[in-house]
Length: 419
Image 1 (spheres, rainbow, N blue to C red):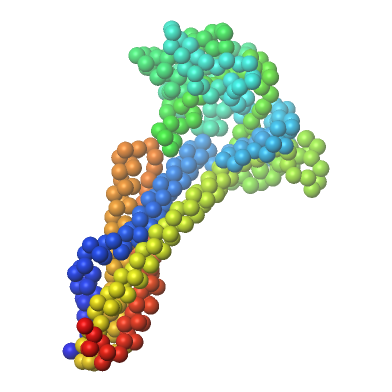
Image 2 (image 1 turned 90 degrees about the vertical axis):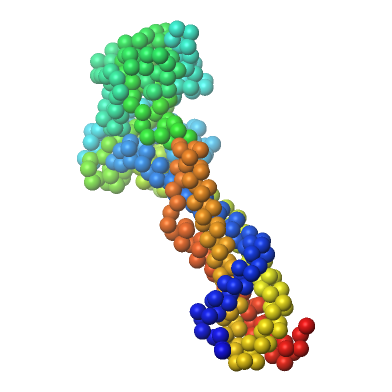
């Protein structure tokens, strides 16, 4: 019987693979590693991107961030250090001159950073919290950034104008200073920068970041004018600008034009300030993901190449071992095409099993990551699984061609004489 029917040829290929289980496993080990690397990295990066998108959108997709230095995930240029900061007057000018801007919150960011002279270490009855990110903000900051309070109230206009020493704190401050009375924090008086401050509110915890903590968990907010009074050397100002609904792009162009005019930027010169939207931050993160993805692809390709070479070598050995079988098949009528198809299917079956094992292990590893590090997102995309299996089969096809052709060209008479 001529075994040129694909179904019969596939059965023979499976029998050959299953007849040498250990050898087959060693052969496809590189493919298994390559598929695992690609899928696990893809699952982590996909999960991280969705987490970033969710966090950015939670702060407001209609917001524009203007600062004199570059913001986001990139590195800042050394020349930027000489830029003059944005001012409160710049924000007032944008609000007055732009027809597409709804509101602007003004922020004095991180006033306790090194070199400002402001000590933002919080102390309460012998307990310390040293990791605060202390920002001075205008009262409208809460509405623009969608902050939700767990306790108390937000900073008022009176607090800001009268430069009151009041604080709205994140959950980390509460956990550090009031571990046994977290539900009764409002009204407590703490020490910071050598003086006393009253806690008037506590922020509800936002969605966790990559490592279980959102930056806002560390925040300590005080009135903007209080911050300027207490840390006069910290002159950096961030504008969080809320565009009118459906006019985000128009607002960006208007804001850019107003700030360029106010800061004396000549036509053709680059901006001496930075403007970003939520989409810009996501695009920056996508650029980082792309770089990591390329490294993962390179490692995966190396594993697949090693696996492909292994498949080709083992198939050449198989051709030698089965020389007499090939001669018998040709003698009873098997065509060259049937021989080629048999060995190609055998190679593709071998690499398919490698891809399948890689997918199963990758799913297990991704689930283990979720179990051990629930804050580190890992979500397996369907396209990664399909691509892994497709590429693994393709490796078998490419690296199985030479052994298959060699087997098909053997002379049946010489094959029958082979011992």
